[in-house]
Image (cartoon, rainbow, N blue to C red; front, side, top):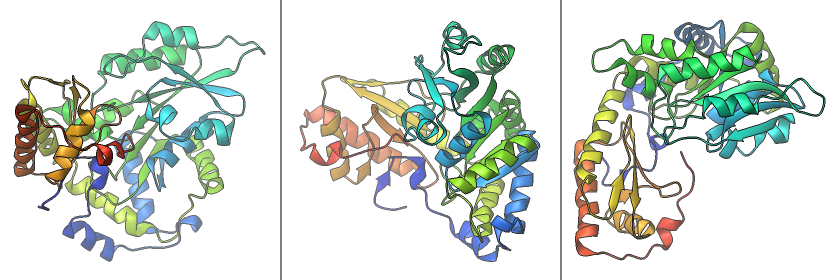
Length: 360
């Protein structure tokens, strides 16, 4: 392991040696012409895993979500979304800027859930005064928290009663599936149970699954046909992209079940940080640990950690994310450094820590 313990995000993972070999062996073609066999195989595989008709490989989760929203909605339509959801807050307003689709953001609870009554109240009547309510967007996991099946079922059923479609930003949906399946359950069956609630789902390969880049949008054949056109318009058509699809396919084969290791390390980190006076640790479901510093020294703590070769972020609370490039020794170093900070009443220069950006 590197001397740096990088807990900023699971996006910092590097391709393993085996993944690099899979990339080197990939059979490729021109995917814009639809003849890259590795991409085609991956799309077929992901559609089947999600229980949907079709899938489309994308460069990023942001583009995948954007293509989904523009495929579901037209100009003057509206999507209902959480106030702090990634699709609303952290994707540059793409649906509004590029699709003239109005977001209707709603407040969320500590687990990222919008109240069902708020969703119902936000759905507009069929009246020319209002934008047309067309889509409900949910996110699972949300800040590392999993959304219960009961909530997913109730929220999506409510949306459909009012004629809305449902999209899942599932950037870390495999983390949710691993948590849902437990230690010995079928993770892919758990994944299918989650996606069954939705008309479309976006899945990232470049976070906990450890691929260098790539996401997949899954949905009906009709929806994916529309998404292909949108992807072309926003510059997402790629050529010999089977190289990247091979990395994603390797991740599905080898990195899904190992997410349990990330979850165990996150739980170990949370346990190690528990009980420190001045530090409050939020509940941990998967691979993300949030902590709040009571006296406003969060930036100083980040600088203290950085000086010891430990990287974290502080944009939306002190955040540590475990992944395949973090091991138990890195977690022990982190706990020791945090406890040292609070035990000594350390006040460190915080300028470098304040430069941390990005929620993912």
